[in-house]
Amino acid sequence: MNYVLGIDGGGSKTVCILMDDRGQVLGRGESGASNYQSIGIQAALQAIEFAIYGAVVEALKLISDIKVKAICLGLAGVGRAEDIEVVNSLVLGLQNSGLLPITWDLNCRRYNNSNIVICNDALIALVGGVGYPVGIVVAAGTGSIVFGRNHQGDIKRVGGWGYILGDEGSAYKIAVTGMQEALKAYDGREVSTSLVEVFKQHLSLASIENLIEVVYRRGWGVKEIAALAPLVDCAAVCGDETANRIIDDAVKELIKATGTVIDAIFSHRELFEVVTTGSVWLGKSKMRDKFAKSIRTMFPTARVIFPRHEPAYGAGLLALQRLAEEDSL
Image (cartoon, rainbow, N blue to C red):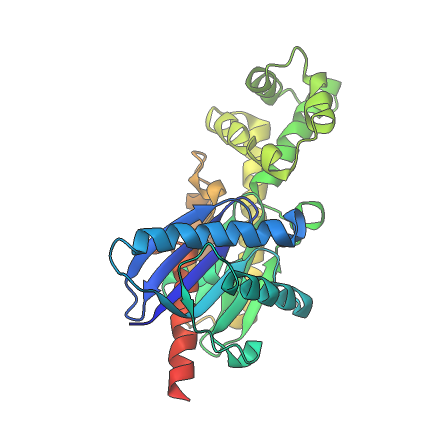
């Protein structure tokens, strides 16, 4: 029997699943971040290698020999030709690994003629979430992106420009806006908000002015700041006017982005599904309910769903699809 690997590589963790050619998942492994643009190529290779190792070790409890015939890597920030070349080099590195008890048979002639699929993590989130590569994924976690694909294979992406240039509706933007509004209220530029005390208590600050020390001098990155988004969410649930405005603005941005994708690739009579993924949708302020209600009102043929499978499973499905295409030639 032949096997495929599905890799979901992001800025915080990497997940690998190992499937047989019937689509049964035999192993799953996790490791750290594998966004090579932020951590470097060697660290990304190591993270992917460790995730594969975890999946293989689990699978070896059920099978004794693993021949990998296809692999799909859905990685954050990948999309340009130069990105694909870098990831191709990572796959070559994996095949030379002494850690992985795998027999590789990837038919590596060229990227377009091999059983290696390299794509953005938004595509595998769509395929895993919906179960097939048609629909829209609205990913709102540390960052945000909306990605869609129709039955004709047309794709449209909105957002995903990173925390400086975009990521509207993300946990990072919610957290940053919350801190900004707290400081404006402290200055007297805006109405008072409970966010001042919320941040002080959570971060053990003597004064909200000490946010400067936390954010700048401690060298906090995107992930650490994004982790404060639930504080804004909870303040909104408790009735804070400013926090509710921040949450509502985030929802509006995600609705606008989703509407843009829908208008670009789907007709208003076409049935399709919109899958929501990411930590932002797990909050208690009913962001997802507000989003789903608006999308249903604006686009009656759209159905907002929860993910059916994780993104790594979507990567596995794409690897199986590539394997089937190669076998048909």
